Amino acid sequence: MLGIVCFMCPGLFNALNGLGAGGQVDSTTSANANTAVYATFAFTAFFAGSINNKLGSRITLLLGSTGYALYIGSYLAMNIHPNAGGFVIASGAILGLCAGLLWTAQGSLMLSYPTEGQKGRFISIFWSIFNLGGVVGAAVSLGINFHSKVLGNGTYIGFLVLTLIGVTIPLFMADPQKMIRTDGTKVSTPRHPSWKVEIYGLWVAVRTDPLIILLFPMFFASNWFTTWQFNEYNGALFNIRARSLNNLVYWIAQIIGSLAIGFLLDRKNIGRRVRAFSGWAVLFGMVFLVHIWAYLYQRDYTRASVPPESDKMDIFDHGYVPRIWLYVFCGILDAMWQTTAYWIMGAMSNDPGKLAHFAGLYKSIQSAGAAGVWRADAVKLPYMNIFLSTWILLVAGLVFALPMLHWRVKDHTNLEDETLARMDDSGHIIPASEIKENRT
Image 1 (cartoon, helix red, strand yellow):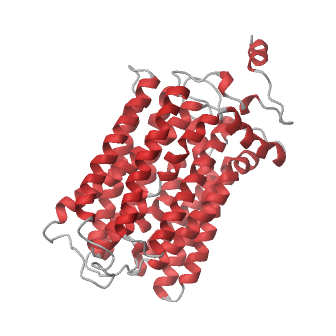
Image 2 (tube, one colour; image 1 turned 30 degrees about the vertical axis):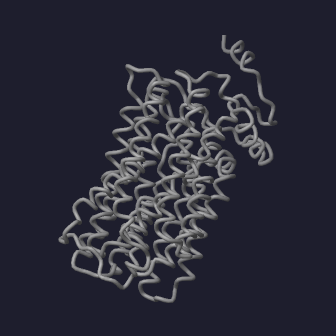
């Protein structure tokens, strides 16, 4: 059900964004709206772990999902009234506030429900269902717009109806307090202490696990590359029919990528540390494969050479096939990157409270990076500059993560690692030895 919420809400948001410029001809409004989304997202997500732990995941999900319906509705309004760009940007700012809540609740549940040997599988299953939203949205868009040159109102209306359905799903989800893992253990649900203690818990989570800071470059890069993929490649080079088809295969590739890396990260016949380094090596290889291939195309065009009003590449044109295959590999890389980042956080803890803070930090830093690069696109920074910054940041994220994997990822998570699970409502941390004595 968590996957379906994200299928209907951020999944369809992704389908819309993946069309390049939100399906519009001019990318400026879309880029500015995305800047607003990720700027407020970065702020909210930083504190969203505390909000999630205070309100509970179901209410947090419900509040978080509403912004997606408003945002998709704003594009419908702009399609009807071309001067409604200000409404789209304002809706983006509101969506950012909501998205910080939704993704933090999602991260906490997805990483705390599985056993240690199932985390890769749970993440990949979630990522597959979530990206089915992109697949369905892109398929609908392709069908409706196959013979069109612009995106019709029917596409936006269809997206809006599905998103509104997604908003209602958290009302029917089970309370985390009732969840039992497959090995018979109960999920430890976060306490609901004062706001002061909850915000203090964010500081405690980072202070007692400072190596999380080495993952911040990986978090920062994790949505940076989508601007080049969506606007500087798909939006710049292809007409609406080709963009729709590219969008469809991109989200299908996301499912393939998440399942493939999830299978590797959960292999039972090798230790967790070996799996961590194997996942890192796969990401490193994929980053260079995709970006060397992409450079061969990016060097041949600029903003000036492919203005919005120029004739774009169609699916029947010469040279289209290798370019859509590049987009497939872009989707695989994106899914592998996100899945591995979540898996590494899950390898650090099984405590939902701590994982909510980590997920909030992840989405906050990720969104700060995305806000910066979408703004760079809005002010028309050269395509090559954005492309090279994408490549460099991905490599830097992997380089910084490597020592963290060496020092922090262990074959099993110990009670000593679960700092917030040992913190009482007054903020006092109970020693692990004392808890073990009480259990015995």
